[in-house]
Image (cartoon, rainbow, N blue to C red; front, side):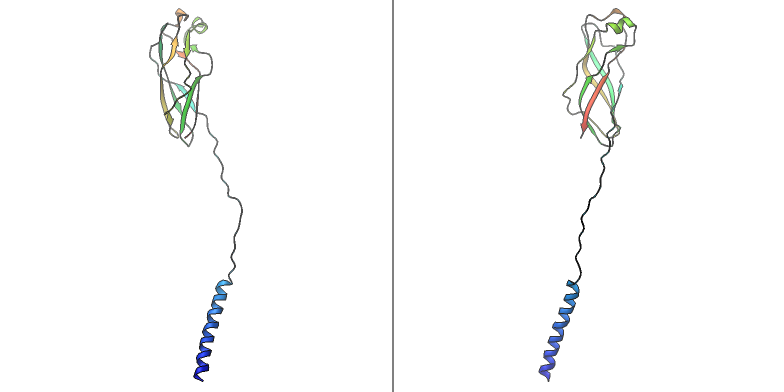
Length: 155
């Protein structure tokens, strides 16, 4: 009898392990597929304003152009170019506007000029403005407004 009892005990233990294992392996595995969502922000235009000036221009000479560039975006921007985008006007009389003799050298390959998110960067473009000898005499002492387009990309 002991032999049968021992066999029954082993058989019972094996049956118990099998039943417990069956319960564990009887759990269903599930997965799911679908889509997540993310939306890109819309970039805001850089804000360009004239900087302070000093009297540097004269016929045959060149001078600095100063401006500040504000980045209203939540990401930093690397400036790649600053180019003239319209006629150069003066703060003087019409005769000066008709013949300012002032030109601007486009800055097409700027590197290392970065504006942090939400920051304003003061910019001085050394020698970027020039005045030729055709400038009207009434342009003496005048300030010149140079329309500029500043281009860049997120960094």
